[in-house]
Image (cartoon, rainbow, N blue to C red; front, side, top):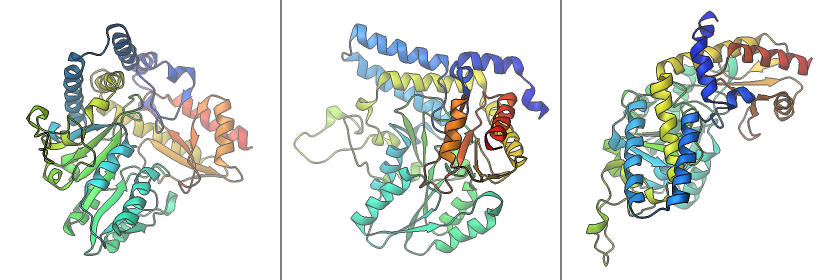
Length: 401
C-alpha cells in the first residue's frame, strides 16, 4: 500500500488540526467524526459572542445568512442545487420529514432492506400503523455471500403496483456494503417508485452526486464523515419532488414571507423549494458555524478527491489485514466497502472485543445487537495512518490468541 504512505507531511498537518486523532487511534468516524480545529474554534467563538453580547434581533438575520452559505457549500459537495438542500437537526429528522410528508393511502407499500438503521425502520413502523401501509423487507446477505445482481433482482421482484417508496442506505451501517444506488433508482423509477436514501455513512466517505444518481430524496448526517458537531443534518429533495412532500412541522422560516401571512386564516404559502422543511429558529448558531467550518476545511484545506481515495485505500488495507487473521470473518464484501469495515471473531462477543480494544486506545465500536449481523465496526478516516491499522490488526491477533 505504498500510495497510502505518500503525502506524509499533509497527513501530519491534518492530524495536528484534529488533536483527537493523536489522543487515541480514532477509528469511529461512522459514529462521530473528529472535530477539526477550525470547527472547534468557531463553536467556541460564536458561543462566547452570544454569551458576552446577547442574541438580539440582528442575530436572526445572521443565522439565516449562514444557513444559506452552508446550504450552498453542501450543494457543491453532493452535486445538487441550493434550492434542493435543507438543514435539519439530524439524519433521523430528515428521514421523518420525507416519510411523514408523503400522502400515504391505505394499502400503499414500502420496500426496504433487512440492513436498515432503526432511524428509518422506526418511522416506517409508525406510518404502517397509522395509515395502514405495508412494509416489505428484502433480505441482504453479507460478506462473501453478498451478490449484487441477486440483491437488485430481489428488490425488483418485491415491487408491485402498490409500491410507492424504496428506502435504502447508501452504505449499510451494519455491514459496510455500498449499494448500487443509481441502478436501484433506474429500476424503481421504471415502476414509478420513489427512492429515499439514508446517506449517513456515505456523504464525506465516497463521491456522491444527487443529479447523477437520480434519487428523489437523500438524507445525511453532519457529525460523521463531514466532521461536524452533533445536532445538524442534511435533507435533499429533488426539485420535481418538492411539491409531493408536505412539511409536517412549520415555523416562521418555513413560509415564504412571514410578514405577508394572513393571521386569521388557516393558509400559508411555503418557502421556495427545500427551505420549507427547515425550522431555522431552532438551529443553534455555534453548531451551524462549526459545521460550516468543517465543510470548508474538507473542501478547501484537505480536498474531497484526496479524501475519497484515501478512505477507500485504507478500508481495502484493513480488509486485507483482517482476512489474514484466523477466526475472523469479514462481513463487508470486498470491493463494496466505503469507509466502514465490519468483522466477527469466532468465540468473541463484539461488545467484549471492542471493550478490550478501547482499553488499548483503539476506538472502534460494536454494532447494536439488533443491527444484524451486529459486527465489530472499524471506520477508516482519511486522517488514519497505515501504521494504526497494522497495529489494530496485531492487537486483535493478541487478544483472540
